[in-house]
Amino acid sequence: MNNFFISAAPASPVDDAINSWFDPIATWFGSVIFFPIIIGSISFPFVVLWLIFAAGVFTVYFGFIQARGAKLSLEIIRGKYSSKSDPGEVTHFQALASALSGTVGLGNIAGVGVAIALGGPGATFWMIIAGLLGMCTKFVECTLGVKYREIDENGVVHGGPFKYLPVAFRRFSKPVATVLTGLFAIAILIFGIVGGGMFQANQTFAQVRTATGGDDGILAGPFASLIFGIIFAALVALVILGGIRSIAKVTDKLVPGMAIFYVISCLLVLGLNFSNIPAAIGEIFAGAFNPQGVAGGIVGVMIIGFQRSAFSNEAGIGSAPIAHSAVKTRRPISEGFVGLLEPFIDTVVVCTMTALTIIVANQASYREDLGAGEIGGVALTSDAFSTVASWYPVLLAIAVALFAFSTLITWAYYGERAWSYLFGNAKASVTVFRTLVCLFVVVGCVATFSKVVEFADAALFMCAFINILGLYMLMPVVKKEMKKYLADRKAGTLNDPDTTDAVPVDQPA
Image 1 (cartoon, rainbow, N blue to C red):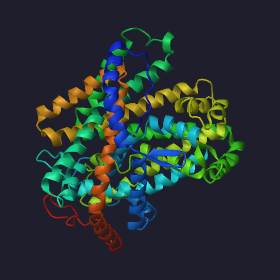
Image 2 (tube, rainbow, N blue to C red):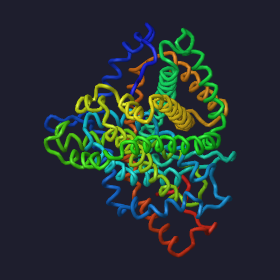
Image 3 (cartoon, rainbow, N blue to C red):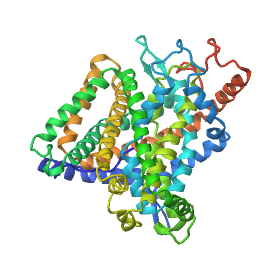
Image 4 (tube, rainbow, N blue to C red):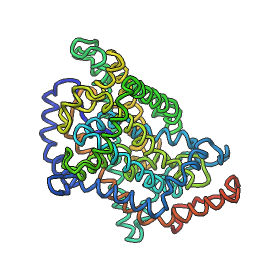
């Protein structure tokens, strides 16, 4: 999840006109979705409390399955309990890589930088705690995404919240279920086109332009953004036209490569500043429980850490189950165990590495920005990387561009599934959506409709209220399957091809 708009060029009159017109709409909608909770001098969005509270409830209800099931998760990723005849489109590893490509991005770099600047080193501790709790939320929603999926005559999977939310809400009434699921689909569609398409394209162009010399570089011409946008849209089209199978083939190579490169880069910074590591760890723990610290003491630091974690790994939003539902499996709960790894990798590993890198490097910009959050998260991370070599921030810019590209193609798929739910699965209909995504990629490179992106950001988090409510209603179904799966594993019958936990969508949960 990325919500940091870096403009590559000054806004045009068209940009200003659209932003001005959209400003009251985005402001009102954002004030509703991100309704503030005030504790003393600290204000934070209610949606963060909604997500973190749910993660805590699920963690207790499922007996801390994220800790008990860690070994099993790795076994499933390696294909220990898989068969080539399992129904679905992608492997467990490809499903995880596709989902991660939608969450691991600029938010892990810039977002963490801002969190550390605002909340100090202690925010890292609470960010990790929230990430560990969020693992259980992903466990629940990814299981349900597979359990209630449908596979059409062409072998294409239709799953995720669009299938389990109608089941969850039908106890209210069919009209209520239809309206709530429809609102969820519209929100995903909006973010898929605007936040996942236009925004990511804008960030990619901004980062590449900066890395190639900025105002004096090769992308400084009047038509550079348009040309870049057309080329970038063509690359996106080559991937998304093949659907989830094509996306999975790209992300299962791109995401691990990006993650490895980024983690190695962080380790280089940590290695060069090895003597500062003990003190940095001490600052993290001290800052997490310092009642006189920055950002309003313990509560303020905790909220900042929780907020960054929630906005980064998207546990509870309902987006990831769309990718996970395409997995090849006869046991829906198996993908729940795979899904719980997502917040661990995104938040506990990648976000924590970013935080440690910034703190350990202890650059002047970090010390100046501590408690203010004014310099900018990317700048703090870039300055930390510069301790490796003066040219190393260029590689960071390339990594950010690749992160943005992977996020874009995954969110294009999420938006496509929402489009199909709303307008049908006809080939012509899907082609219209894919064309729209590519057009908005070009628009994103030449325009800076920041207020439109703010509206899309709020729309995405509207999904959390709907999705979490559905998860509460269906969590007994997940618990029943979890117990059965663990019992079958103990009995050694998980590879039985005649055993399946899937149910038709219209069967009572």
